[in-house]
Image (cartoon, rainbow, N blue to C red):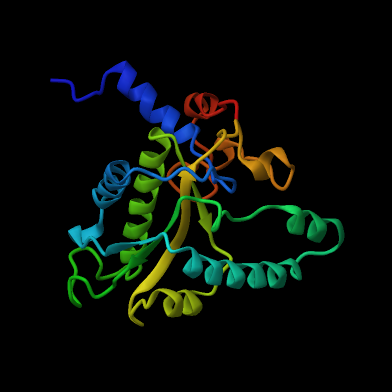
Amino acid sequence: MSHEFSDAWKEGLYQAIFQRRDIRSFRPDPIPKEILARILNAAHHAASVGFMQPWNFIVIENLELRRKIHAHVDTERKKAAEKFEGERREKYLAYKLEGILDAALNICVTCDPTRCGPAVLGRNTIRETDVYSTCCAIQNLWLAARVEGIGVGWVSILEPACLRDFLAIPEHVIPVAYLCAGYVEQFPSQPMLQTTGWLPRAKLEETVFSEKWGQPPGAELNEKLKIKN
C-alpha cells in the first residue's frame, strides 16, 4: 500500500513551500474569520515534542495597540542600523521591514514552557524543544496562509520584554514570533533580500553533509542536489 499523495497534491505542497514569502506590504482587505480559523487550525496541528503543544496565538486587530508596537519597532530598527556601516547601513534603512499598520491583523505566537509541567516526554536533554515545536506551528501557519492567498511577515526587530508589556504576556511565556498577515498585491518570485542583493541563496549542495559534519554526500546525491535556486 502506497502512502504517497497524488501528483497534484504533491505539486501543491511544494509550490506552497517555494512560493512562501516574507511579506512587508499589504492590502487593507480584512481576512474572513473562517479563513483565519483555518490558518490557526493548521498551525495548531504542527508537530510538537512530547505532544506538548506549547503555543498560543494572540490575534491583534486594534490599531492603537499596533501603533504602539510599530513605534517600538521603528526605534529598534534605527538602533539595529548602527550595526552596519556606509552603504550597507543606507540599504538597511531603505528597506521596508514590517507591515504592522498595513496588514489586516497581527499575530503573536508564544511558547509556554510550563504547559505540560517540568517533565515532558522527549525534552529531558534538549530543553529548547518547546520553542522548536512552536516554530513548527509558525511554519504551518505561514504555509496555510500562503495557500489561502494571504501574505505573512515576521517582525523580529523588537524587544521581547516590551512585547510582553504591550500584550500582557505572562513572564514565563516566551514571545517567539510577531507576524503581520493580510492580502497582498503580489507574491514576489524571489525573496526581497535575494533580489535586492542583500544576500544570495545558499547552494543546497553546500548545506548537505553525509555521516558527519563537513563530509560531502556521495557523488550521485551530490549531483541531484545541484538544483537551480
